[in-house]
Image (tube, rainbow, N blue to C red):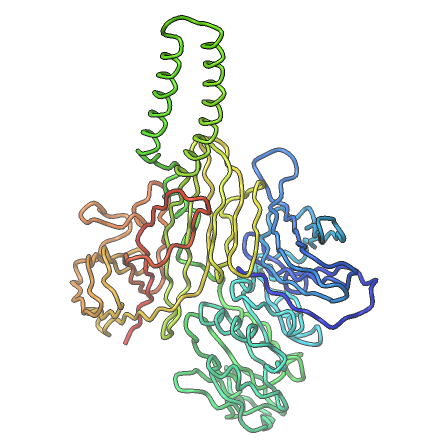
Length: 577
């Protein structure tokens, strides 16, 4: 979760601090949303930091906040731009942004959150004019709409988490830098929904060709039809369009015999191209316009991983290292032996002084020992869920980690760059320090308390599974052996057991079991037999689930301690071919 920043030419002093939250102010609670902070030219230089207090609904009394810290080096007279993800909890209170340079606070600004911009579902249009998404505002489900320029697009794909639909109208990819293009493409491949509006005269979209379902063809005009056929899905002409050239496998809708809408999956995401302007006549007054936009929005996305349930199933209390017990016991015995030897022949002035010195020495030793015991006994338990994007070499890695400190105390956890990490449960005693190398989570736990975090990253992965047309054979290509594998489909599951890197599993139609059936006959994974909710919900399409060996750890304790890593859970969508 590195802080992204930019430097701008020298400008006159006197500008105000600028902070932009979300997408045109549109945000969602509980997921990463982008925050852009623009520092005006200042007459100061040296080490500085940006601190952002995000209110949370904590369990403690008072106004709890989670603080995100971005260190930087100030250059006098230079405008700076910083971007960092923020998770919102309590939207009744504003964010507070503070800028300190040289150990002194220089700027401060409150960023209010508009309740009308907090959505259960969010649709964003990249456009220089605020128009086009009005039909979504009339849907029964509450959809918040927003309009932004290309410069507002994130440079981390995780910061798109609040968006259900992104609409690119007349988008010129040349106005996006490489980081923005990469983030947009990765978000789509890992499950995002994108509509590209490319009417006649639209800029070239070659830079996004890898995810587009069609190429822009030649300008054309949909002819007027006095008596359009019954059930026509688009209005009758005349109106100008770009005749699209659908790519292999893409679906197409035609108007007047011309393909004007093309759609296709891009990994786990969905992309459509519209070769017309939906805000121009005759679409502006067309009765089917709302249905067109509703279909583009699609159903609400549901992750197969229930992060809260996964966190609840991880141990909340660490096991103390046996060496720690031995260390403490040895120190206590040595202390008692010293006092015994000092007082064995009665107390004299010199022996009283020696005893007092022993007590002071013991106090110092035990103080150091307590810190060492806490550091060595602090532990992290983590589990990773790897959601493969179909037909791509990428997967979404969600790692859930639980941090625990015996008897309570401070902890510092390091998460590598490339991951965006957020607390699973509200925490007011937390500082998130963002640098280019890593993210540090610094907080304090009470006695018996544990804290859960979730880190999201994109990783290279090329697993594949296909089910035969008759549903009798499952072909998997995993790259590594999977243990305790199962095939899930709706509320039914099929026990597979171990599966080789490349294997074909013959399925017995009688081997399917229902979700409410007997589950003790097999050594099933903990993600399906949790004490409360299962960590993986029942999918509506076939899903291969199995345990594979974990990769590099995500959560690392900065001061040592223990790490308990569970096997990585592979979630592999199954094709029907």
